[in-house]
Length: 164
Image (cartoon, rainbow, N blue to C red):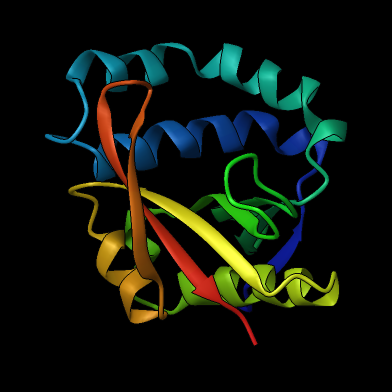
C-alpha cells in the first residue's frame, strides 16, 4: 500500500472531479456557501470536462494514489501574478479519511523539490480562513504575509515559504 505521486492523466479527470467535490464539501462546510458546495457536486461532469481540456495547460498537476485510487492532488505553477520570483501552490488536498498521515507533507515536499530544481526559492500558498490547513501551512514554516478575497467573497490567507 505504497503511495505514489504521478502526473495527472486524462483518464483521471472523472475521479479527480469527484474527489474535488468530496474534499470541498468536507473541508469547507460552514466556511463557504452551501449552494457553492452543492454546485460542485452537481457540476462534477462539467468539472471533469474542464480538467480534461486543461490537461496540457497545467504541466505541474499531480495526483497521489494508493492502489490506483486518487487520495490527494497537487497543482502548482512556477510563477505568480502578484508575488515576484515566487512559485505558487494552487491546490494541495487530501481526502478526509487520509488526512493526518503525512500525505499532505509528502505533496508539499514534492512541490518544493520541483520548485527548488527550477532555481526558485519562494513559494506562496493561499488558504481560506477557517480551513484547518492554515495550521498545517504554519507548521511547515509558512509566514502569513497577506489576505485577499477568494471569489470576491471568502477571506483567504496568503502564506510565504522561504525555501532552501
